[in-house]
Length: 573
Image (cartoon, rainbow, N blue to C red; front, side, top):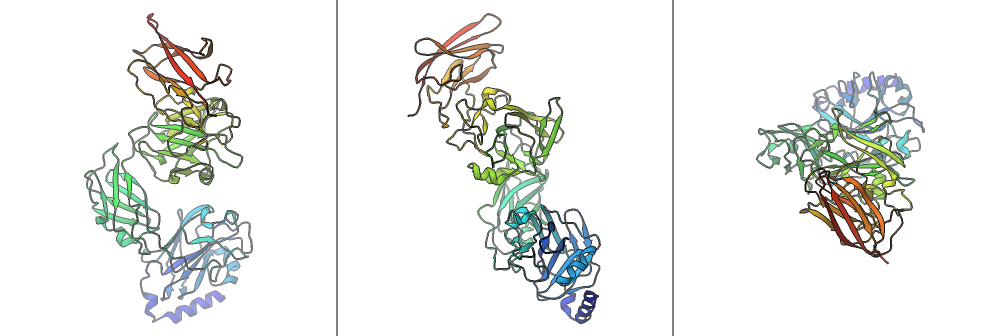
């Protein structure tokens, strides 16, 4: 009854004041606090709420305004005049009584339920203008304990609402929030950061979406002349900033993008809503995505036995000439009966995977960044879950959106470097992405000098098959198997004259005694390599010195040829 009386009084007082009738502008009213996860309750009611604050000099009647999230919307059907520098709490109808003790409160039938982990909340005027929108997730709290529930998210500087991602943190009030009054974290937090172009994706052959790291000024963002795509595509015929966050811009072009072609989008003169001009990150790759086929994307590195406080990860490499949308890729396991299960989507949003690039999927990107050298953190994708990756042996499958297998790996911890005492935190790296995925000799431990993992960049043990002009080539001539990432292995590279050859490879010491039977009746491709790790047949270290590698190749037609090559095994002291 008290709230209704105040509402009617304000409405009568506002009659004849032109400010109430004027069309609101973006950011006149802001969402400055929200409680998305009220449980366990700290000192506030166990119910969600959104707080609005009028930061303009005009009063507005909120009748007909809309509150929305990603899945639903509700309209305010109460006449309420929100005066300058004042607050209004909005919640479900059932929570009005509980929150009315904190200040002016309106209950909305169909109040949008706020997701605990990630959501976008927007406020729209009756004229269809997006007045304010907030994107949040658990990182917005800047406090891992408070993000688990009971604490509200508060805006730091309500006079600078453009700074969407760096202007929020968990409430510092002992009750868990400050509904109906100035936020506990209130302070000056001016946005002085230039906007950056994060990435692009193609909606179709003539439409590109440019994604920025913060909300843009809609006027500068909607000028087509501020954008250019190379290779003859040119300037778009239209540019439109996308609601509600205005951090994406839709660009429409008269010319069509060609498949398997990587373009460059160049952005100029665009500003964020605080007036900061585009910075150095003003270009990004773009192109038309294609469907991933067999071995277009491969498993390139895998950490399945992390440190005690660490997390698994899987690195992918695009070895094709296609642009792949990560939204259309999935990871999964295969059961002993061949059934595919534990399927997870790589990205809920369109994210382009360009030729020659890497992506890493994990359940905790912070852990990967903390435990390994990550040269490009944007290539680490955090998923809510990964397929099961046991410490001893397991499998990982890559699927496209049609359910077809793109790559599959069944790994074993025995593939690690033979002299490693503790496998925890050591990633297994693919040596050559052009060799078969399931080839055991194509995998080894990441080097110690790389930190035992190279997520999102070239593997420490990477080596491509070199096409030899016939016969056998040894590389390097001197190797030191100490797992320092430099010449740890001796590679026996071959090129067979024709298909159908088989090889036997035996290694002898300087006295002529066989110390390692490296290959026995191994079926050869036209080219490839074998790898010697400096160990004998009992996986024991061999002494330094000169060794002879005897390679015999033959086929069913009776053709036989032998090759003798000399290699020096050395070690660091």
